[in-house]
Image 1 (tube, rainbow, N blue to C red):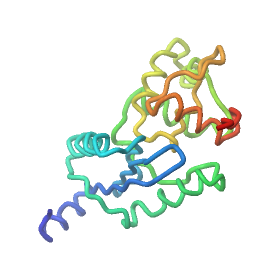
Image 2 (image 1 turned 60 degrees about the vertical axis):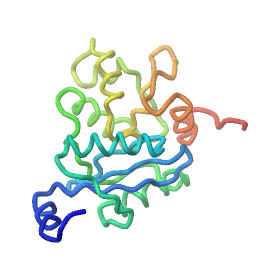
Image 3 (image 1 turned 135 degrees about the vertical axis):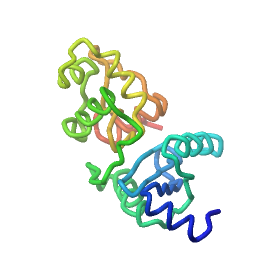
Length: 190
């Protein structure tokens, strides 16, 4: 716990990191935010996953993440995720904290976030071409795997050019569920 003085200093430094676990159609998600915006979305937020994510966030951001589901920093992300999974929202309109990703990976993820809308997909090679690196399809795949903001930055919409679903950090079943939610794949029968 922080003393009041430490808490004030932490907030003034802009390093406040708050988090909550929310239920979704694809299992529990850990959402974390800073004063800049949403910084992390983690799939399958079991206790072990949560602890690993929070430890990584603390060391990368230099601030101890605080569980605060009622934080104003999380209110809109939580609301928009609920609307997305309810089929009431197609796009996320949230401030994002990009501090966990840089260079080529950030360039590719920003391109993805702004040019691949709900209900569409793009190939790894196509996305590489869009950022001026036409031979970097494999690097695009690595960037998708390093995405700290899945769903919001829709790496589930990146697929193989031969029609294969491709990989996914949240697991292939999660990717299938997200693509079905967006109408790209048929909903599973059971």
